[in-house]
Length: 136
Image (cartoon, rainbow, N blue to C red; front, side):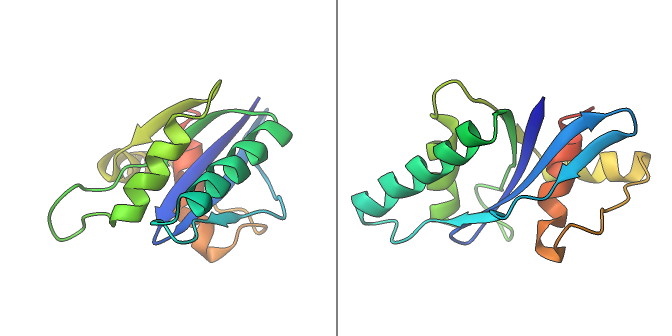
């Protein structure tokens, strides 16, 4: 079973796809590492984003996704586009979506010795943590 961790940053959905193995979660390095939302005020761009992201999940047999949850208010509040992207992912048919709090990720990182694969790009590290969280 393939699972996907996602971090929403700015207008980008950053992906890390993981698969279960005897050694634990294994990173699968796909050429698509992020998908950008164009102009969030343009309906055609929003629809294009959702179709592109849904196609990525279907084409790669991903059945479950976790997204790093963003704060709704305060200093670290997420931008409006990230909430729109989150909603677009949550309503994709036949896709199980979980939201993971930053606190849960920090607690998991303290308890487990997380080793980042060499195939991972630096900007994918948070998405990798989110994906590993799915294997709890």
